[in-house]
Image (cartoon, rainbow, N blue to C red; front, side, top):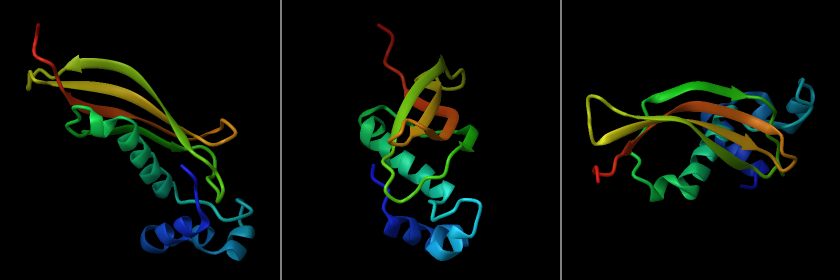
Length: 131
């Protein structure tokens, strides 16, 4: 996914109006040295990539939440992002036999292979009937 300057500013104007997300001159004076995407924008882009890559074709039933969300590197205009998924564990839900809980790690990487965001959390999936 390509990160565009106008998308960074548009997202920030609506949801995270800090100067280093909105104004290049103001951002240049910060520790970031230039305009960066909001971490929440990065998370939203990651969600879109997850949906496009697998969630919309899966038996997803949503998520009870995250254990970890870390923004490790700034995301800048012109970056190209992709995700890497690792399944950490799976188990059936005791309270709902047709539902499984999976714990996963999603890494969002830029074009240089740097991890810019890390999320670990849970997803609920419909289970196949026992054979």
